[in-house]
Image (tube, rainbow, N blue to C red):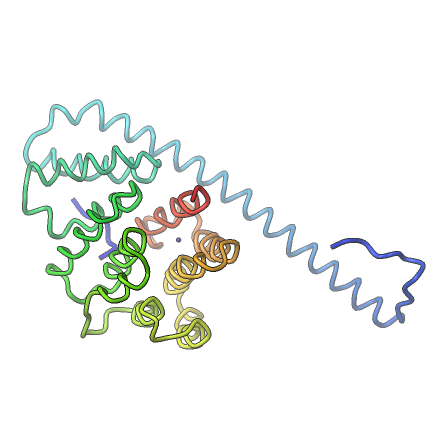
Length: 268
């Protein structure tokens, strides 16, 4: 899956005497903290600008497709709907994305089983049971992809609660890719957060892509108990890849899902 087809108050200075060596250390620490904070703010501003430019380009592409798609037929129309659905999803037009993905299946029923993107569109449109059903159908197409199982779990949690979601998790027997076996155990409750962090650490340290999925899906897990920490994880995941690298060397479609999830969670 997941390759797009056709996550202090100031103290009184006069009451505190600080030894010179400690004062120097504190001053150096404060300077470093300020530098780190400024660097993060600069990177965030640059990323915001890059994302704005990217979304402007997506909107232009979407308008062009909308002007021409009515004249397309057969495979060309399927391909046009697929691309416009993706663009609409990335632009936050969640209903429009779902309509395009669904029309693909109306034209060609064979598109249904492998259409995991439609499941994600159902999720963001808060049609959770239909999303869970879509991911379950995808499991018949690919019984190795635990990321699909995580999305079914996320739909089930929203519609029927944690206990039901954990009891109905899809079964997997083959290894797929890190960090998904560890994430699946975390979501299923057989692995605690501290043990999960330790298990995934060497893989996340050696691969930026693994680190992205680790932070994104850990954030979705943590956000249920600590919204601020969960959102911070997802923001960190998004920040790993500049907007202009996402399609070629980044996580592609799922990077946009992480962006959308930030807004989705903040509105809940």
